Image (tube, rainbow, N blue to C red; front, top):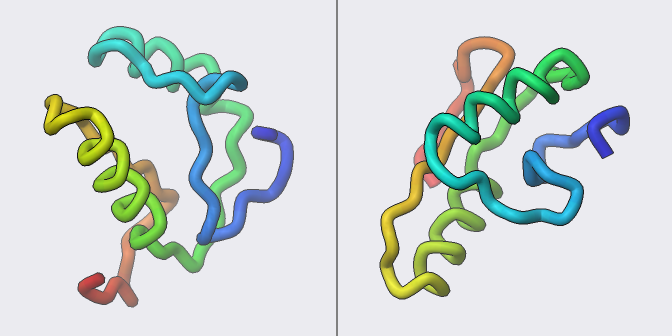
Length: 81
């Protein structure tokens, strides 16, 4: 999946089985593993990831979650969703 071109409407997990990272340490470790394989390109829309994050939090009875958005440059055309 990482080798494929990800469009601005796609959201992907850091793991092939779509599980979540457990804590900052695991998140940073996994990002360092897959980061070199990612090809980021604009334009970017953060709306899909924000909507999915809200759904995950609602389904988890309000547990604390961290949303990390990694972009390849500034978001000059960002609009409030």
